[in-house]
View 1 (cartoon, helix red, strand yellow):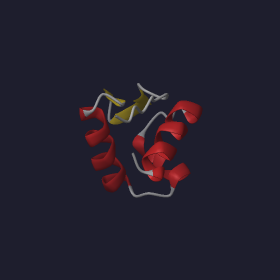
View 2: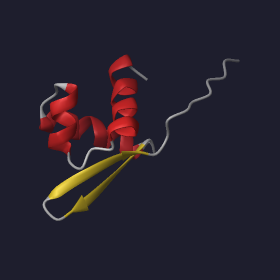
View 3: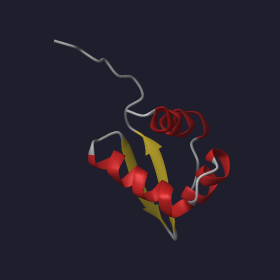
Length: 70
C-alpha cells in the first residue's frame, strides 16, 4: 500500500469525516480522484462508503496490517 493510501486511512480513522468533500479539504486531493481511490480500497475491504442523504461518508474498516514474507 502506498504512503498516500496509508495516510488516507489514518485521516479516516482520526478525523471521521462526514463527507468526501470534508476529507478532500484535509488531504488536499480533489473529490473525483479521492472517490476513485476509496472505491478501490472499498473493494479490498479497507474502507466503507455509506450514502447519507446527498453525501458519501467514508470510514476506515482496517487500520492495522500484518505483512508476512515467505
